[in-house]
Length: 247
Image 1 (spheres, rainbow, N blue to C red):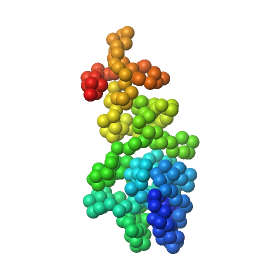
Image 2: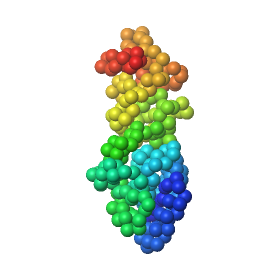
Image 3: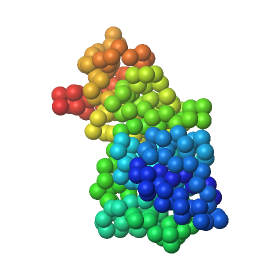
């Protein structure tokens, strides 16, 4: 089994690699000190398992695990953590693999044997039940075998595009393999639904105006090249859009 080791502390990575080096069934194929590098290496190396630290600066382990689901062949995840008993209870309840620091050989072997792929809903549940931050700071697009992180702060619009969601952002457009419903639940504090197939960043809305045929239209601040037809507000959602703008 091919294992990628991710931890922002070099001694912790060295300890994990030492244990893996003594095991015939596992080999360490790479290491990373942060979530961004971990995603790049996971896309390149296609590991079977990722040993993933939770507390890391920048992209933490929870968000990194979520984005790894965007890979064509997502790896199984084992969290390494120094969290307290309440977080551990959450891991146990959801059957999520974890290893407590300092890492012990027997426990790591058990966790590696139990490693499994984690659904996004499971990752969010772990974060919620253990009082961690749940909202991601990025969404992740897959293009040409690589993972591209798009900061939420750069996104103007999420809109349904057949079986994918198109993400319009300040640097262009990408497709992500997520549902609009899940995005609305996760980012509803920053985005507002304008019709069944679109969520618009509230901060990007300049105003609501009437079209020549009497429909209500969202006008974006940045003169985005989004087709006006995509920005028509349905009657069902008009009151909420106006209320969010007042807020």
